[in-house]
Length: 271
Image (tube, rainbow, N blue to C red; front, side, top):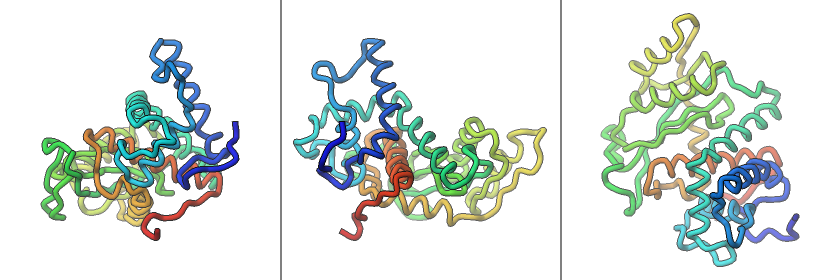
């Protein structure tokens, strides 16, 4: 049911909820059929659950600091963890990306990608075992390896210790992209990927020629800039790396759904 007033700038509008609702409703119906529904009793409103998760991603507050007009934080986090585990964020990211590409007059599936990595500091709650030191950038924390299409929309993400090399992370990301997006035959990458990733990409399909690696960093650098509009990503606050990946997917879902509905929200850096 449409609501007359949005409580927070991060809340879903009716138009944005219309884009996300079918996937979340289908997820709940599937879990209910298996006797796994989180929200019984009472059954929580999926829209308000997503509003709460977006609030955390956009504002950066700890889960325990969620305003009391949302469901209890334990419930909200439970849904977040379940949606990450069941691939709901990956599904929504793929759906939003295809819709944005089509709205831009592109084919739904890309034919080229751009790779890069970003090292970020971590919060005190992040286990030391999942951290490392990026010797080149002198940053202790984690590293985000991402692959995007030529519009800067997320294709794959991997979060590792910052000590993991760009080559090692890039091979993993490129392998996932090749498996999920077989139309991609070209990649752009910087000099950090000049050896193993290039060789790995060039031989991924011996029968296909023409795989190219060309410097074009600005597209993926812009994507990292978009992610920084979500304060939860200013550092890595997640205990588990796969939850960090989910927060990145969530930020891109937020961005793409706003692009589709032509909405904007104040930037926290300018607040």
